[in-house]
Amino acid sequence: MSLRPGSLVLYKNGPARVQSSAKKVEIELSGGQRLSVRPKDVALLHPGPLSSLNDLCPQEGEVETAWELLSGERTTLKDLVELAYGAYTPATAWAAWQWVADGLYFWGDPEEVLARSPAEVAQEQAARAAQAAERQAWAGFLERARAGPCAPEDERYLKEIDALALGRSEGSRALRELGRSESPENAHALLLTLGCWDRTVVPYPARLQLPTAPPDIPLPDLPNEPRRDLTHLPAWAIDDAGNQDPDDAISLEMTPAGRCLWVHVADVAALILPDSPADLEARARGATLYLPDGNVPMLPPQAVQRLGLGLAEISPALSFGLDLDDEGGVPHLEITPSWVRVTRLTYEQAETALDQPPLRELHHLAQAHLARRRERGAVFIQLPEVKIRVRDGEVIIRPLPALNSRALVREAMLMAGEAVARFALEQDIPLPFTTHDPPDTLERPDDLAGMYALRRTLRRSEHSSIPGPHAGLGLELYTRATSPLRRYLDLVVHQQLRAHRRGEGLLEAGELLERIGAAEAVTGSVRQAERLSRQHWTLVYLMQHPDWQGEGILVDKRERRGTLLIPDLDLETRIHLSEVWPLNSAIPLRLVEVDLPQLEVYFRAG
Image 1 (cartoon, rainbow, N blue to C red):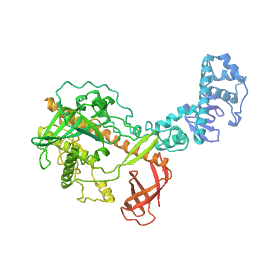
Image 2: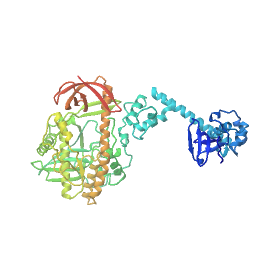
Image 3: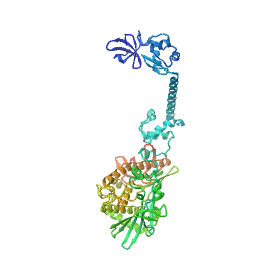
């Protein structure tokens, strides 16, 4: 390639004029800039002479006619120029090259040009038309996204925003083009603004990569095995109204030796064997996801239908019989598969029957056990609790009173958990024990601010294959064994106990730790999704009641900033304190604003 001064060359897809040529080529660009480049960095378009790049003005020619004559053939740039423009000059060479660079009718390089076939041109024209239509559609979507509302044809663009809002992608071209930060919260806000989502869309389970549908796994029939008939004992499953997975019930039997507290638990391990498909799915889920607008069960729905206590006249159970001495100790524990006849009660119904036998005797047992735990240093924190339910889009929030019937059930389950843990230790059965380190303070406040501060200092309980005390509960040993329908590690406890009864192989400590790790890896996300979803629906409730007024209890303050608990909502908020309030003061509050995507709510005192 001979490059002389005044030659027209191609440099980085643009025209350049050669100034001089040696080992390096001195070129001038359109803006007057001069560069020294390697010969291989440029391609000759015309030998010149070209006086100025300004001479490369648009040219009129018969380019399409030339393409029709050359269709499907190879040629040179010079021949194409002469055929299309009649003369080979720097200006016509540059004009022809722009047609080649465009790629519709021709393609190639300055040394060899190929004329596309009619079919190729038609295909390219269709592709370009589609691209132009897409650009126009995208521009139209952005315009509608700025002003609203969106059109049906925008659905494909909205899916990208939807994916970001649900945590299924990390970015959004639409948000980027609209000048918004690419965050799930901003995607959520845009979808609300455009009317694509409404307040009932709760993104947190999906955002935390949790399943939002129940497992669909077949379960075997109950094994043909002996079961102790305990149907003669009145048994009560006491739960919140509307509970759909009753997995525990209680009975009291008077025996010649004294009293026996029976805690009957849904016999889930009879159907779900270790490492079966249902077991692996439950392990991956960790726990049932409880949401105000509906639950996502850990187990297939038929497990609850077939095993839930009190859902049929007679229910299969794994029953724990705790023989009680005069001091409330458990000198003997019996564990047996059973048949039980269970009556279901709400906490409110049970509360009205605590002064009548046999719930009266069970209540006395529970209160005695509660007192013993208190003596052992158990931590009792009574903060406001509410029940949140969604019915036909309306949010209903109901405060939960501190009923004695709740304490009855809680203490019975704790007694069973402690007895099972002690039994496992004596029988050398590996279990996921629940342990808890003692708090740093011996103080046991009874005011709301004090209990709020104490809660912040408490360490989290832990699961371990090594037994140890649960200081928070005031128990020397403890394992969770009464909720296998909704907690995976409770199911593992039942699987181990059943294997021990049958003389079969038990999980070793290492295998148990693997199950503990698998469950804990997901249960944190389950609890977070529950907490965020409850907060979401609480804010929706406030949006449905824009004139809300109430009061919050001041539980912490830092200079002019105060933290308040709103008992009627079980909601924590922070406000600016315009005056001095002592802790535990009830401060009147008025709703100011709700930011649903950010899960933020603002109140004003007064």
